[in-house]
Image (cartoon, rainbow, N blue to C red; front, top):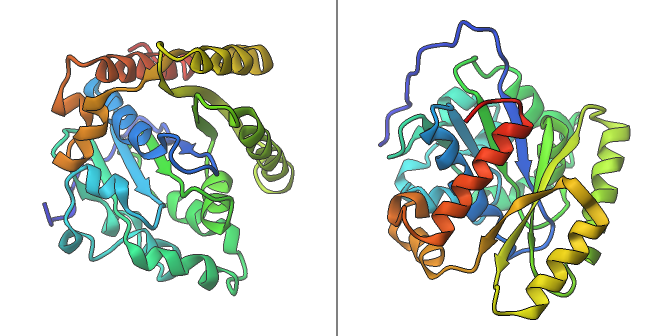
Length: 271
């Protein structure tokens, strides 16, 4: 898995749809959602590129990429001018590729400060991506720093994973304000694609209460699909595979397939 994949260029002229998976709070299921949504999209013949923009590199690990396979990474794209074509790597999932991340990305926040167009680095790289990709999913770090800002500036839309816990609404209101600021200052087309409720426990009254509160506040922006707490979802990354590959029949897999269907419906694509 060390060779750069060479896909035929799409001659249909459709530019990739770019979606940031973002929430400044950690532990809400951003990476899990990125990996499994990408896998579900690939399963219905969408060509998907994940950009791992989290220094922890969990999306890369969760798709089975070893550190030795990350010699060109998202850090090189942002800081050293490497192209996404140079950086992207194939995965075991047909039609799914990834631009991996590593710990060197943790220094990018500081290094980007000195760049003249520091918030535009990822957008400029993505503008040069050949039309052989239908969707780009950007796995953002758990912060609202320059890495996440680059993702929001480059994206058409934001998908927000939201854990069913007490402080959920408080955290997401901060993110929504940030999205509005980015929309006003840098990216007028930016929209919220949707909010997905994660780690839902039907045995827990708090999960139901949070879900109801979020739906009351955001209405139809919230996806109908909820991602349940599921042991198989938690186990899958340690095997270097999406849960859709690890256990296609588990409740978590079925939920992510349903989420992909909703995403495509909102995008106007028949799944």
